[in-house]
Image (cartoon, rainbow, N blue to C red; front, side, top):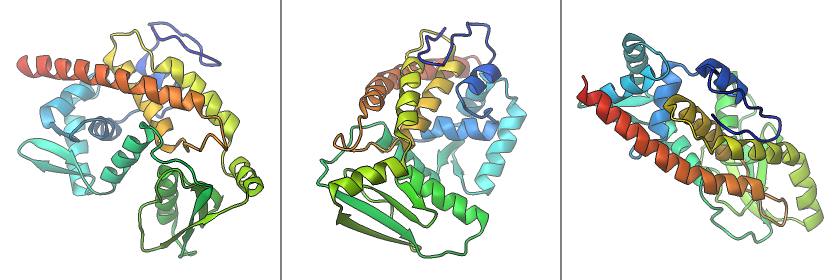
Amino acid sequence: MLHFASNVSNHGNNETIEEYTERLGMRRFTARSLVLSVLLGSDPPRLPVGALIDFCSLFDIADGTVRTALSRMVASGEIDSADGAYVLTGDLLQRRRQQDVGRGATPYEWDGSWWTAVALADARDITERRQFRSAMEGAKMGELRPTAWMRPSNIGPPPARRDLIVSRGDLPPAVSNSLVDRLWRLEALDRRAGELLAVVQPDSDDLAKRFIALATCLRYLRTEPQLPRALADNRRADELRERYTPEEVRFQGDLRTFLRVSTDAR
């Protein structure tokens, strides 16, 4: 059973995976999303097919469904297959790097300057717009308007793109404070961090629910802006980062044990 803070209530051990997932604000996991999530959380991001099938079995997803999803993901270029194992490729490796940044300490002191990223192409289809938005959010940029994104330069710039101009410059303190309030909903971010502080401390043996809890926290940490303390109080988000890492280490150890036992039983 998990102990929840704030408005996240305790529903007990009888809660189903689907109910638990919905309550934490996550979409229902499919075979594809489970494979991507577990590979994103693995170091290196590579697992044998048997391990992926056994992991998905925790969520009552059939072998055939997993194999079909794997074939489609290889065809779409999301993963590669070699020697009976699957590995992340392409843009998903960038997402993994974003996750690594999000769960670590902020790398730089802030000198008062800001990154500004401006998209060159106004006419983009909906898929391109979604991909661009995802890239900017993953780089922890805040949306000033759909083609202009900004953030303090206490972390690195967004990844280089052909359709993007990135610049860096100083802003007066009053402008910086005003921009922070415009670009991010700080109260909501802080409240969510407080809720997740409880979620990341499970005392359950249920690997599926522990995975969902960690995935929920990691999704938050990937895009939480990690603003300078001069502009925002990130204490609860920083505490979440500190608690997340040891829980992830424990989970990965328990998952490896489960997969090893499951493989031996085949």
